[in-house]
Structure formats: structure tokens, C-alpha cells
Image 1 (cartoon, each protein chain N blue to C red):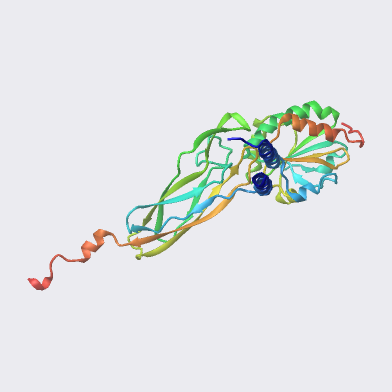
Image 2 (cartoon, each protein chain N blue to C red):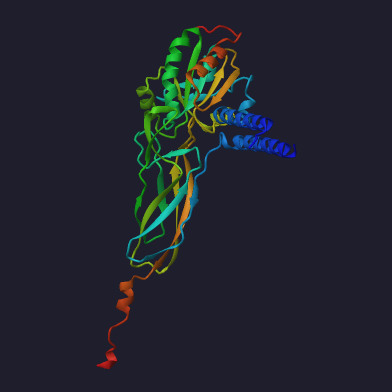
Length: 184
Length: 181
């Protein structure tokens, strides 16, 4: 049976496009309202720290590039990222990076604290509220990470687990903001 | 030539359909589908089993009732039975030990695809024979290969028909009429 090469090429191209598009959509899809945040000031918030003794505000980190990570103890992919964040905080902290975790658990903050301690977390973690998630366009699933530049603008947001190198690329993008250099 | 055009048009339509499907699939909380069982007849004072069937959409998994990691949310059925109808037990299926692309080195105990939960019901002897509805919630927390969704509760209900026990029927038919003597 003779196969028409044009048909074969069309079918191959369509299948390739479907695969690429599907993978991209699954890994990086985002709520429409969150897309609207790109290039705009990151909404400020005020959340309790895990020990309940302090209040963490996004505006406290003005002048720094912030990696804002929404996570939860029940989220296994979130657990994969945490050691990377620890390393990246060490590596890029001196350049002005601040990793900030927001735990979207409904459990006792003590359990979250214990979990974070076991994971060797070296960055602050706040007890999340749905209202804060809503400010960021809704957090339909975890992990959800927002990259905020030194000027406080959202430069990127990533939903779901991505590779360490992709996270690092976004950190570099946030750090390369032309804003004021962070003062440690 | 005509056949070529038809195939090309079909391929383009398929691509657009897939794009639309991807848009809907990604980022949306997966919903477990519950298939209510047919009404189960249970004799009062006796145990009866009701099997509840669930289906998890493709590409997702939920933790089993006994996840290996204590920080993970287990799948659990919470039932609210009518007065005098006791839930004597709930039997969950064994989960499957699986690793996922986000951590190939760690095994999670999960349910995927179809799974069934067996509920043991015991109507007390005093219950009036009739149909009764049992309501409840399936608590679960789903993930895919790269992300996890907030814990969710799926409302469920099933009906049982409480009937008289065979022994009760026998007792009510005296072997002999007192008038014979």
C-alpha cells in the first residue's frame, strides 16, 4: 500500500503539536487571574509565622527578589522542591534572594513547623490563608510559585513541580531586576 | 486528493479538540466519580455488606487509607447512618505501592482508577422494616505527576432495605394451633 507522504507529514506534525501543547499546558497552566499579575505589583499580605509570634509581610522584603512558594505538608511534589529552595537560598541569598514559604495546610502550625524542621528549611514560612491565595489569582493546586523582582513586581509564576534549573532561571530573572540593590 | 484533504481537516480538528481538552484538564481539581450501589437488603439484627464503587480520573492518584507517610492525607469514608442502624465497619482496599516522576525513589501507597470500599451495616433488631438512606463523605486528596490538589470531600449516599430476619418469620408462625388440643 502506497502511503502519501503529505498525509504522513501532516499527521506527524499534528501529533507533535498535541504532545508539546498538552505537556506545556499540564505543567504550566495557570488561572487566568494569576496571568494578569505578570508584570504587576505582587499583592502585599500579612500572615502569621509558624510560631505565631511574628507577622510576615511581603513588604518586609522590599528591595529583595522574592521566591514566594505556596506549599503544603500533604503535597509530595512540594517536598521535592524544598531542599532545592534551601540550597538556592544559600547560593543566591547574598545576591538579594529571599525564599518565602506559605503553608496552605489546615493542620496545626506546630506540625507544619516540625515538617519544615525535618526538611532543613532555612527560610521563613508563614501560615497561609485562602484569601492570600485569592489575591494571587487563586491557588488551585500546589506547589505554586511566584517570582517577584526587587521592585515588587511579579516576573513569573509556575504551577506544579518543575526542574531545579527552571527554578534557578526564574530566580536569575527576578534578581536581574533593574531596581534598587538589596541591603542585607 | 479529496481523501488527503479530509485527513488533514480531521487532524486539525483533532488538534484543536485536544487543545481545548488540555485547557480544561490542567489545573482543575479532579473529581472522583461515585457509583451508588443497588439497594441492598439486610435482615435486622444481622450484618450486611454494601460495596461502594469509585472511579479516579486518569492521570491522577489519591492516597490510600493507609499511606506510608504520616504527613499525607489518607482516603477516608465518614458515614452518618440513621438511628438504630449501626455502621459495623469500613473495609478499604489495599493501596498500590507506586513511585511517581516527581520522586522516582519514593514509593507512595495510592489508589488509581477504580476502587471499592466495603461498608458493613447492622440494623438493630428494633428497626422497622423499610428503606433507609445512609449519607456520608469520602475524604480524599488527589495529585497528578507534578502537583497536588487541596483535600476534598465527595458527598455519597446509599440505600439499604431492612427486612425481617428469617428466624423472626419462623417464630411468628406457631407450629400448632392451640385450638387443636
